[in-house]
Amino acid sequence: MALTPRAEVSELFPNVQQEIARLSALPEIRSAFAWLRAQEPQFAHWQLELARIPAPPFGEAARAAWLAEKFRDLGLDDVHNDDVGNVFGTHRGHGKSYVALSAHIDTVFPAGTPLNLKQQGSRLYGPGVSDNGAGVTAMLAIAALLCAVRIRHDLHFVFIGNVGEEGEGDLRGMRHIFSAPRWKDSIAYSVVLDGAGSDTIVAEALGSRRFEVIVRGPGGHSWSDFGAPNPILVLARAIQAFTETPVPLSPKTTFNVGVIRGGTSVNSIPESASMRVDIRSTSMAEMERLEQALRLALDHAVEDESQAAEKRASSQRRPFGLSCEVVVIGNRPAGELDSNAPILQVIRAVDAQLGNAAQVQRASTDANIPLSLGREAIAIGGGGLGGGAHTLQEWFDCSGRELGLKRILLTLLALAGVSG
Ligand SMILES: [Zn+2]
Image (cartoon, rainbow, N blue to C red):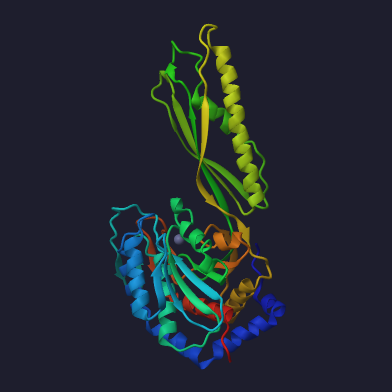
């Protein structure tokens, strides 16, 4: 999606732009900005502290406990964990609905990864410091601010440190929140903080489906059992057919065969072979279509290899059966915001107010879940600058965090409503 020029935003949505200007000029918001600036050393300290607590996929409990304690210390209400380990804290407004500010607390790093975090000047180094140390810290910063500076907001805020965003976590934390009766209808807007930066707005949820395909056969000796059906040949046939499936440029749709395994030795007919397939699109229909193409290619490949094996086999040796199992190992739903969605109007107006150039993007984030349900959601960065995500060389630069925090604050307050 193209970036809408700033001038156009204010022409299209004059009231939103005026409202953001009004908010920015309120004395309590001016003091909020000053407070955020003064607290930067505290924010950097929190960021290092949390990144030192291991949070591998399905092992986020220690970091969740740390966050719950911070929520309590700050003075948030109703601090609690849910069944899957998400941490919640609220700041009360007046209405019934909530504006949710969330950040995933899990990392990609497996248990046992050395978490050597250090600070040099304005730079923080170490695994997870930016993804999602930056997001969690920005969420804490906003929560701390609302507890320290009195701002009357209409809707309630709920702050959420959620589990299971990365990899095999498969958005389980967010999925659970949006299936919980307490939250699924009461969260009116979701702002997801993921990583560093202030220059993007994720408003399109890139969906993905991931499969592990396992083909099994009787196996055998390459010479004496020649003719037995071969699982590797099934995969080869299936890959050939599947990867010829046409995909549209728009909505962008992709596929990948990323891992292939199997076999015993050069002179054995394999007993099994497997592959991992990744399908991505912003369109649910395209993902469905490609999944069907994959399943069809596998069915045909099993059939063709069985027939070919019968031809290869000597008349007295009938080939044994082949089986094929398709296991879903990832399923992230796709979705996108309407271009006139209020949440998008608000963040664009905030960017215009702050003179911040940001681009609307598609990505796979926690926002996939609300977006796929047709709800108002965006994912943005926690400010500052970051790099080396998902590597041990990850870094975060705190300079510029202030802009990101102002951006988050104004967006949240505009969504919640602040009485004049
Ligand atoms: Zn992340």
